[in-house]
Image (cartoon, rainbow over all chains, first blue to last red; front, side, top):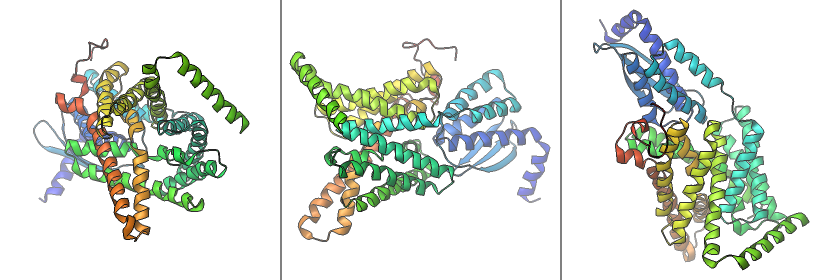
Length: 264
Length: 194
């Protein structure tokens, strides 16, 4: 009997393993898209699978997770693969799953209970859009101040960040390419920031131009990239690093485009 | 325009007033202390962008402020541009663990937004400008100088980011635990039975 046929045969005889595998893959892909590092995904999935007396072996990639379950006799009972969705940082899901994974062990939750909890976590509200815009713009003004800007520079950094983030949100809603969204956001932000120089209000020496695009820096992929490399997950580390490099390129292109327009 | 001008002159007057009444040691220290506030605001802005649980927002602000304060405090005393952010991120990484226990959220939720104000945006910008100059410039006269500053800025960016991410995971690397749940922090906070 060919080995893959054997696996299929065994898959049929363990319906609860199939359910558990689907659940664990859902958790893994959710964690991957919401900005967790690779080691955390592996630990969380293994923690939950031990609560059901199964052993999980994993291959974790940037866009897919492959999971194989072994029962206590050491038989490989189910293997499945799931592709991740669109990446978008959401620490509320990260935090919720982390808390849940400990409760699962303590209170011996069933698969259905965990699925319900995941549904609840995914339905959790985001911050209101206007709050996000205002807080991130405040962060842009703060960046400008930290880099040595004065009040007029800070005001322009605030408005520029607001405009850039607004453009980005609108483009993301219309399902543009991710890097293109970043490019247009950087372009919009620097167009507004450059206006301050043209009107003679802001001072070019105070870095208002560059700090207005800092809200676009891919902080989560960048830091996760290095922490993956430190943990020894070299492959995902390199992928995340190159991903953040492309983001930085998109930001630089947007900046260049408006520098060309303003002839700076 | 006029109101803007008014605000800035007003702040200047307040500054002169403060200069008159405060001892010089405090005045020397004020610009560094001010970074605490702005780094904190920047961290909170990114926390909102990353959609953290609302209960952690204040603590992320404090962490970001402390990290930025540590960095600028050390730079003020002549520590290098690479080592100072590393120390700042080590402070953030260490404090993120008691906060994680106290607010029941994993440490990355605290340390990633708090680290972002320290990402070297200005150095990266200078490196990029240098690269553009290198593409357009074939004059041997100032080519070497531009090349030197571009490589210098680029290496600073690389090592600062490396230092930031190493600093934040220092507690995990040193204690060799699988999860921060195993680290005892009851000295700081009352732990729930977990």
